[in-house]
Amino acid sequence: MDDAVDPHPIVHGPVLGDAEFEFIRHVIGENAGIVLGPNKRQLVQGRLGRRLRELGLSSYAAYCDHVRESGPEELVRLINALTTNVTAFFRENHHFEALASYMLPEAMQRNAASRRIRLWSAGCSTGEEPYCLAMTAIEAIGSSARWDLKILATDIDSNVVASAQGGIYPVERLEAVPQGRLSRFFHKGRNEQTGRAMLKREVRDRVTFRTLNLLHNWPMRGPFDVIFCRNVMIYFDQPTRERLVRRFAELLVPGGYLCIGHSESIHHGTAPLRLVGKTIYRRNTGDSHD
Ligand SMILES: C[S@@+](CC[C@H](N)C(=O)[O-])C[C@H]1O[C@@H](n2cnc3c(N)ncnc32)[C@H](O)[C@@H]1O
Image (cartoon, rainbow, N blue to C red; front, side):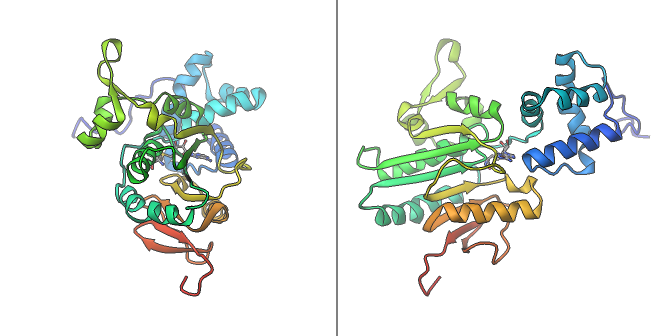
């Protein structure tokens, strides 16, 4: 038998039993909209093991009691531990190309009087996506003060939001950033920051980070010219996705765009949105050719 495949792997630390797994699935579904399938037990156990050790708890039953008793504070930690934050600079780059080639030029034409451009990265994780929106927009419209360009970046996970705010990344994470953008938009770290790079103030100043649960009320009124909500809805159930898409559409300016992740789609008729490119939807303007 291949000894690399152990049918009975040794599990270190407390084991997540059925009832506790069900409780955690329920809590995370109700509070974050995240659907954890039955196959995610090992993942949950792996991600929460550290928290149990920090709390000095020897069982998941004790941890579930702690979640019940301590309320919102532990709930935030539980959600932070169970979100999947995979992201990258210029991930699904066709969206940034579309932003530069027609989304921003159209917004500039539409907003010629107000000179305001508003973009939203919903589910921004550690900040790569909103900073790419900022870099692309600065290139497209110029960095002059003539345009009031603001990017809102939100995520449910307060840890990733805090890290994103710093705008500092290990250089290995910048492999997809072309040399021209690296030298224009990043400071190379020195001394104790060697091996890291920091976004220049010009980019950081355009992005406002906030912790926001997409299932809750949204404090902003919009309208946004472009919303990126990529690789977030994949974790939600269908009714939650459809509700969210309708809310995004309401906050988009007519003619504005919603970009979603490569494995996501929006059912025709869910909202006044039309598919105009690969995972790119445009809000109807009310014109007859919509
Ligand atoms: C896989 S990352 C996607 C990051 C980025 N949009 C991208 O495509 O590279 C998904 C993000 O969605 C966030 N998220 C999950 N549920 C959320 C919710 N209910 N409200 C807001 N953000 C949520 C997670 O914390 C995570 O950072």
